[in-house]
Image (cartoon, rainbow, N blue to C red; front, side, top):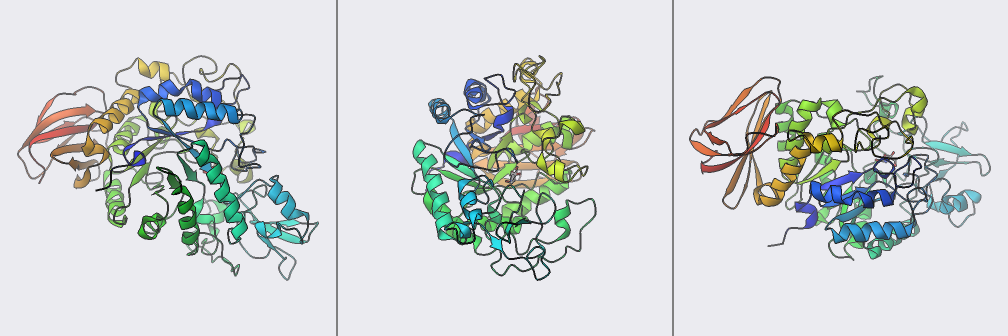
Length: 534
Ligand code: NOJ
């Protein structure tokens, strides 16, 4: 039998480098800052960090517009600082995952400058250029995720180029083998340096229809939806040919031992799981974002866990995400009490959990005044609640003026939070921090949690109960989604066990028999010693 791999048993922690720790007093986080905070991450118990893009960039989309794939933006440091961070992380048993952004570059990348220079350029076909439509307008109806047409007119050459995001982020032409080779070389560059894997940006976007057919209208579109939802992205994303490209990318990762590829993919579960690839030769972990938009009811969550478990291909390793740099923070989405229940869910489900920095101290969305908006999405599509600045604010290390993040005013407001900072939570045994730390520790100690099977026991509107089992070990997870107490009992009746963790930070060691009484917003993990749930 195959041994389990680090990215299967481990917990991943996502860092937004601009906002983790500023070491040089410019109000923006950097690599040296992350290195300084490694001991915090070691104590928390996580196994790997994923850094959103740190490469040279004009920062039109805060690093997702790369102008050099094989260097570090001076804002964050240089290659020396990166090597130092990598070495320090590895020395402390922490893996490092970088962000690979293969779908688009910055419009300032030398490849694009060369491509744009003339229709005859050797790199013209590295990007997606089309003649205007017969009426002189854009070649077709494709829309940008960041608002407006996805086509930008280039007056000098008389053609349009395609950009799924900002006009400053032209899409590479992944049908061109030279583009594919160039990005594979980028992967090898970082793998050779010792990087343990990549989170691959918008991987389901890589291939577009080669006939450039119009996308059909979306009959379910509502005016409150993001504007690009007006069309179904039938011809711009999730094209069948994308899987061949991903398999190629995976073969590059497989040239190096023990590396991981995690795909950013927003698709319904049944289409998402195709990204494990034929014979699991695709992404190791296609990110499972189903909890991000789910309505927070026990029965809904139980339904989607069941759906995901059933959809997974044989041998496909699951994974779960509660928050990231593109979504409102979990503590604001469902409230701080339920955020603890959600954290217990994340860290007890079967599959690799990814924690978004700050969620382990229940950071909330920070209110961003109109003149503080930095996010290009909010700037382009104002007032629809799409802005992502509120979840990207500096890590709250303490209660001082700059939250221990910086010595000066930071690039986004810190929004001081009385209790939701590291120092305050360290002193409070009942805090989210301690819940997270205990759960990560328990995951490490209990193979039932890190490797065991998932068994659905019961779910109603407010109560979700499931088991995790491995070898002789059986754990019962009972989560109360409501603001009233509930008794978690189930038909098989006679069983007894010991309570290992309550989300409230007390009760550990309590004996349990036949049912677990849960307080409002409480989750518990129980080790079953006699009897069982079946
Ligand atoms: C997905 C990233 O998560 C998001 O932050 C970015 O704006 C887009 N890709 C475009 O690169």
